Amino acid sequence: MAKSGGYTGQILHVDLSAGASRSEPLAPHLRQEFLGGGCINARLAGDLIPPGAAALSPDNALLFGSGPFVGTLIPGSGKSNVTYRSPLTGWLGSSGGGHLGMLKFAGYDHLVVKGRAERPSVLLIRDDRVELRDATHLWGKDTFETAEALWDEEGGDLMVMAIGPAGENLLANAGIVVDQCTAYARGGSGAVMGSKNLKAIAVRGTKGIAVSDPARFASLVDEAFGQFRAQPALDEWRRAGTLISLDVMTKLGVIPARNFRETASAEAKDDFSLDAFLRDFKQGDVACMGCPVGCKHYIRPKTGAHAGEGVTVGCMNSVVQSLGNYCGIRNWDDVVSLARTCNRMGIDWYDFADMYAFVAELQEKGLVGVDRTDGLDFRTGSGDTAARMLEKMIRREGLGEAFAQGLRGVVGRLGFASSAVEVKGMGVMLDPRAVLSCDAFSQIVNPRGGHGSMVSFTMLGGDPEKMRARTRKFAEKNGFPPDATERVTQGPIGYNVARLTKWVEDFSYAMDGLGVCTFAMYQRIDTRVWVDLYRALTGLELTAADLLRAGERGLNAKRAFNLREGATRADDRAPPKFVDEALAVAGGVRPPLGKEAAEFLVDEYYDERGWSPEGPIRSEKRAELAVTF
Image 1 (cartoon, rainbow, N blue to C red):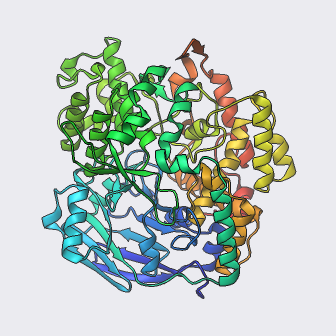
Image 2: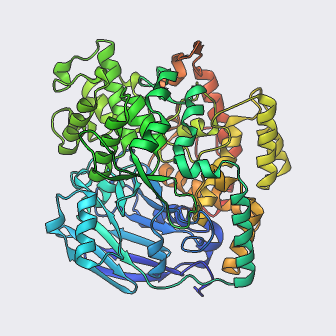
């Protein structure tokens, strides 16, 4: 295609089996219909991953993509995506990160990796030069060691995406760590990379990003930064990162504990004092490409057994939630140490913590003894026990073999499936009984499994009439059709969660297609600014409705892939615990969703999406969205 601003116009295909590569023009209709990033990745997956291809087979593809905004001066424009068939869920997996812009500078919007190398290898990309290098000497090293070795051997200006021992050993929850500081964590992308004998991908690009209308673009970038800087909590975001919300999430009972039997207590907040973290652990800030916040933390404990050992953590709130509250661990030293191990080994800490909490519940109820858990007592809240279990999982030893397969693997070994809190095999992170938010409900219907599409304004709930007003503002800001606005603002909590989730997901996917972070500070920038930036950057037309439609296409492309592989409505069901059991909260309990209500929510969501009640995408909707595979 003719090169336009923002896009490089090229897809790089690498066949590891043949040791060959080729570039292909990015088809104009993909750019027009799906924007870029994860949305185009989802559409390409339908063509490039053959029906029935196993997740760990050479036929599976790793599709990396960065949208048109990535590599520019637009605030928050660092987000990229990797898409693949997931070994954890069996469906189409995807994960996002903020450090793939170097691929754009090398001249590629997307990278597609298929096949399997004969021996451990590194894919080295320097602009138009693409080659495979032997990586036998790197096999067995962790992600940090691998990056350091490649920087020493090939130059410190490379972006390095690496797997650790978890990926090498094909753990279903293994991730890919980029430049030691961010991860494609959820869904098992690291295992797919390991199955291909691909230890790392190292990229260095020297090409620029073209801008169609530089003067207009510069003016709009200034406008976006103006709206960004006007946010009152900006300085606190920079200081605390995602820990900014820990206090309020704990107070409102949003953070689960004890395998989703209760919510984290006020004491848990005290155990994880922000002041103590900033004083004794945080040493600096790390930002994704194009981000003026830097909400990642560079952590180097000042005291204790791991004093002086550095690690970068992208979302510290998720560390406290998972490795802290899920595992029953109540101190900074242990959770930081466990996060360091997960990053270096290449492990999704949410999935590990969901499995850990599940086993702890079985032990607390006397359903499983330590004789079935390799002598480990998961009830103690011990960081040492969690560290030992991580090691067993990485080595696939004893109970670690089951952990290496994900929650369904642990259920297969220990039983008691009704206590496992997962969707499509992926452990969840939020509880819809606590707050019936779009974030919590999206976990149930999300094509990739138990992880919501974005952090939405509904996450913490609130007064129904205030939430109704916020929902209407969100709808009007993003150009919802009037009839859709009326539908999503109905209901006793101020919004129809199932119907609103459809539109929140579409917005999230659209931002992913552009390459923009969806944290709150970027959601507050006017959608009109994003649309105008796209037009000034690319020289192509776009409306707010087009933006949402591209996001809708991206999600439906994932849905179409899963349907092709056998997915049904039964895969969009809430965990039994959410449906049948009450949730203990401070001062009382919250009722279960109930089977009828849970099924009605899915009915409402399917209807808003234009899907049939059984789950398939209606033929007219497929044609409308150009999702025809």
